[in-house]
Image 1 (spheres, rainbow, N blue to C red):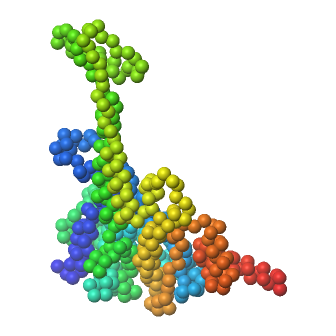
Image 2: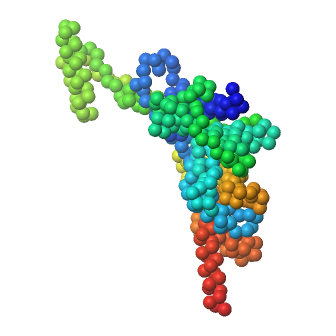
Image 3: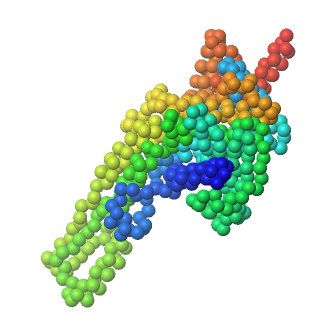
Amino acid sequence: MSTRDDLLYSLLSGLDETRAGLVELDRSYTGTSVKLSFLAPEVAEQLRGRLNAVRLGWSRLVVNATEERLDVEGFRLAAGEPADAELWRIWQANSMDEQSQQAHLEALVLGRSYALVWAGRDRRTPSITVESARQVHAIRDPASREVTAAIKRWHGAGVGHSMLYEPDRITHFTRQHTSPDDAEVSLVGISGWTVSEVIDNPLSVVPVVALVNRPRLMLPDGESDLSEVIPLENAASKLATDLMVSAEYSAAPRRWITGMDLGSQQRADATATKVSAKWEQAPASKLWIAGEPDTKFGQFPEASLDAYVSGIRMLTQQVAAVAGLPPHYLGLSSENPASADAIRSSEAGLVAKARRRMRWFGGAWEDVLRLAVHVRDGVPAVALDGLETVWRDPETRTVAQAADAAVKLVQSGIVPPQQARIDLGYSPVQQAAMEAMTTTTTEGIA
């Protein structure tokens, strides 16, 4: 087996080994994999899938709460300088406003996502695409942690495709498939893959950048934000399902009759059938009458659902704690409504979490833009070593509060008007238009 075959086998194996876990995380986010994990095996066997779990949607809420605060506003070459217009043009030309949100979402759910950079149809505008960890896998150098090789595998029109990215070349492999799912099942070695095309890579680096969520020194591929949430959500789903079953069979009063002579067994069975039919049709005000003087009527006490509610509330509080969510995001509230300052204070953990993700993802987007300029110019973008990603403020503030703070900072001379526009969340295009309007107005007055 050649060195390239070894590399192809290693990357395909890595893609297969991680697939099951990534699919499970994806299903947890979409709510299609809520499991009654704490249901007794004997009960599960008797039910045979007839009991549907109650879906609480916490996984989606936890991820979306962070992702909604991650918006790229531009790029600048040094702190305090306005956003770079050319880099923003490349960003916009690749629809990265939308694609970047998908990359952030995939990274938060699966632990990582990827961006591929290559030449576009227009020489001035390199191509940037975002990719899922379910289709892309990368190998890193243990010393530098840089990506040394990567692969993207997908299926289409009965043919499997694998793109092997190396520093000096890009190899396109194809393989005939008998079913759409065959592209994602475990592969036996590299059997069936044939070289379709080989392209020289003039960049001398792998054009794949990883956006990693919660990376660690020994876990460079990151971790999903759902790692701690899924067990708690499964436990709460079990309690919520038990609550619904109890509400159906135990919470409503059940009546009983004793002392009534039903006669023969045949007559008793017929009477029982009539009573069962009438039971569902009888209004609450209908009287029950029996001819025997010893007949007694009564009802069993209804079951209380408070224990289930308390258990679900406790698990909800745990999810809020481990995910850094404000209590009101999960419907937890006190009798006295919280003030605006208290609400903003409760969001401090979520804001800090969003800012941390900005640092991790921001570095990746800066590498993506450096690669894009390298593709465009044919030489490494050394001038972009100090590139910085500009993010929208993740804090929750009203327009009046943000404007008031900006005015005070400008009037006190702490920041110039250009920085105030950045802090207020205006895009680079809007900032340029405002600057042009200001210049025109000043010249007209002069």
